[in-house]
Amino acid sequence: MCGIVGYCGYRRTAQVLLEGLKRLEYRGYDSAGICIQSTAGALDVVKRTGKISNLQNAVQEGAEGACGIGHTRWATHGEVNESNAHPHNDAADEFSVVHNGIIENYLQLKQGLEAEGTVFRSTTDSEVIAHLVAKNYRDSLEQAVRDTLFLLKGTYGIAVISSREPGRIIGARNGSPLVIGVGDNEMFLASDVTAVLAYTRQAVYLNDGEMVSITDKEFTTLDLHDRIIQKQIELIDWELEQIERQGYKHFMEKEIHEQPESIYRAFQGRLNTETAAAHLGGLNMTLQELRQVERIRVIAAGTSYHAGMIGCTLLEQIARIPSYAELSSEVRYRNPVIEPNSLYIAVSQSGETADTLYALRELKRKGAKVLGMCNVVGSTIARESDGGVYLHSGPEIAVASTKAFTSQLSVFYLLSLMFARMKHCSMEDGLKFISALQEVYDQIRDILGRASDIRDIAKKYSHYRHMLFLGRGKTFPVALEGALKLKEISYIHAEGYSAAEIKHGPIALIDEHTPSVVLVPDDFLRDKVISNMKEVKARKGKIFAVAVEGDREVQDIADDVFFVPKAWEHIYPLLMVVPLQLFSYYCALELGCDVDRPRNLAKSVTVE
Ligand code: AGP
Image 1 (spheres, rainbow, N blue to C red):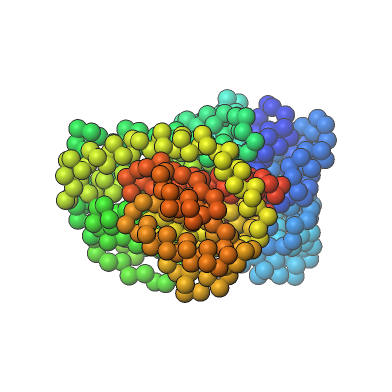
Image 2: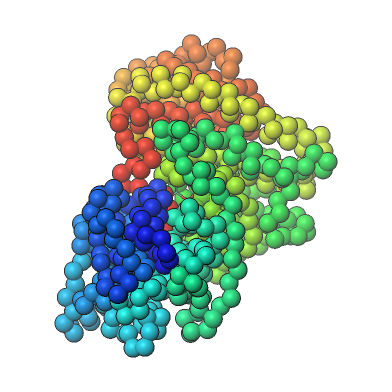
């Protein structure tokens, strides 16, 4: 998705902007641009399609200025070309704007401006903002932006500079994140704090309906009625090296290998052997309120939805609370009925996914209690939830989510234990649960230590154009996740199914050209999955099975097997997803794909 960086200060502006944009690359983009304001005021815009390196090559050596803004664009309105890339200027090149989000009434605004003689240089929705700011300018840039905001319908995070006010950036937010980075004699503005972490750890998050005026010396946050808002400076504790590759070929590989530590962080300080329970600090619910929860509804998208599906099965089986996961994109528009004593959980790595955020707002509007389960601290979903749990996975840079998924599962284990211990679960069973969770780090280390076995298997499968992923019970959503991972980074067509469902249709696809990846935990559904494997083999389908160590029968049936360590049955989703992450990674590597930045995808999907 689009990214914004702004800078006022003593450093080389172009360099700060380009470096910030590079840090935002992981979000996905198709073009990028910067506008540098010279100390005399003139605005110099450079834009390029493709990688940031193209832009870097085009920026003049020594291009300096009092301040500047930069943007990575992920096309929504108008094709990918230089004119549609941001920043966008007004006709006289006195105002320059970068914009994240979508201006829904842009056509109407554009027609009005064209009728007055304005000539547009792009086919974007964003360009109207630049022309409107120019038109509305009377006494200050801040006033011009504010008056413009009242005309816009839709979502925006914007940064605006003007030759009439050198050294000042005006930012505003409605539905698209914006954070101020506070430095000494320098200030930053960004859509994502990772863009400015190299320079400062002090951040101020804007809320919807807020604006900021920035110079190198100070920032002032205001509401849309020109009233000053006092905001707190938050300290960001992510280390920069946490978001660098640390010797791994790709961020995805690094993030897969980080999982023993990221899961450890999800559990850290939350498991209590004294009480044999889990304690989660940020729920903002009393014990009594928690005991009154009669049903849980999870809303999420993509990988987070798959985690939610597994989480609901865990909550139902372990805590005996009826639970159901739903795609957030569907919740918003079906006018959901909020049942009494229901608890909603919005699951989102980024905390910015538009589908999930809008569903959360709709649910809250109808009186629902919504908790957030996010990774990015201070993200919009985290802030707009009634309470929540952070994943503490550390920054996830690769577009394909891996460590956030296992951290989400980890938090669902904690929630299941917490609720179970409030109801029927004995101290003895609680302690068994905790020791099963504490074994997970070593079990995943064991799997990761055998990554090269999966690389060898992936070499044999990466040339297939179609694959099925089959699982049952708690591993059915793992099959969905395995298929999603494979298709998003290797572009191999993959579908996840309940192994029981194949006889209802998908079995028609099975032949020697369509292999199946089958998940076989040693739970009570194992024998049924074995029967499904035999059905696949009877139709010449090749099988790569992920099974539990010692399962000789699976080894006899499957063409290739990867064994995960023996564990408590509820832990298998967490263990079995790791070989699937590695499998998709190595298939993509074999095919020479851009693993961290797959085509058409964005890390944080901030449009509906
Ligand atoms: C994961 O690999 C995907 N890129 C995608 O499905 C993602 O999980 C989805 O967009 C939801 O993102 P979120 O967790 O940040 O809300």
